[in-house]
Image 1 (cartoon, rainbow, N blue to C red):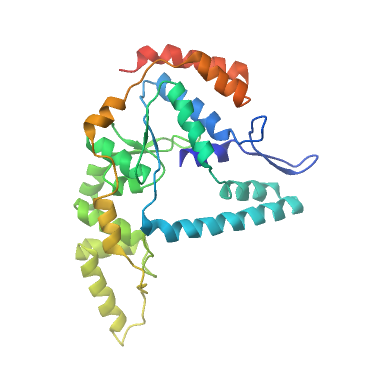
Image 2: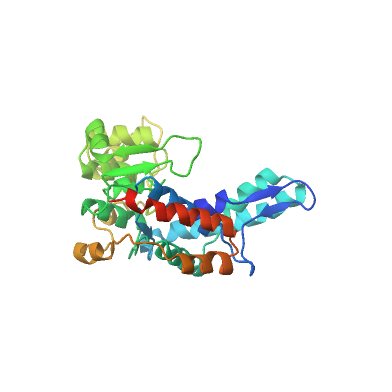
Length: 315
């Protein structure tokens, strides 16, 4: 998710000369916006005494295949709309569509991992969803919270969710899962059912039920099974117009199982042994960013100085 955000944030567009969307690239034409964002964000974390653990997605669960297929089609449509917008001179829309059509390659992921390693920061390759592994790290006491815009981190049980780190305008928001449960008057099982009912990546939703209705239904019935009974009862009432459409693909039980028992690495000792924040490798970092990825030498030198000076700020 962070890589997508960095790539979008480093795009620019031109209305003058030849209109088009510009992206940061190295001498060979490979995208580098994600590396720019990753470099500066990591420096920012370290400067402020935050020890980041970058977590990379692994294989998505089979239940997510329909969602990924839908996203692929949306990317293709966005690419076509981008070209149309450029031809029409609508660069605002072109940039918007360019952001939606971004594709991340295995080579880009490999470069990102190499970068953080050269910066002396640990990373973890999750066997499945990154947010699930982040939540597991927190539950094991190896991390404080999960920094992401994906609310699923809470559904996976992360004690804290930090949002807004990518925005310069909006405040950073820290969400405490225990306070959410207390405020909602729900336990974790009920909260997971609420999230599924609101909509998640693993199943289709029930037509006609939005977040407010979902909250009320779980508050009154405590679980999805009881909610479905009420929905069916309401739909079969001849005096009432059918409000809700339950799809055959409402896979709430499978989704619930994924949130409760996601595919994560639970070997605390092995993970902890690899969580080491060490001094960066200046020569290798310069060779990688300046010589291979066409970074400006002054910006790399500035970031490296900040990174080296931050060593005493983390503990």
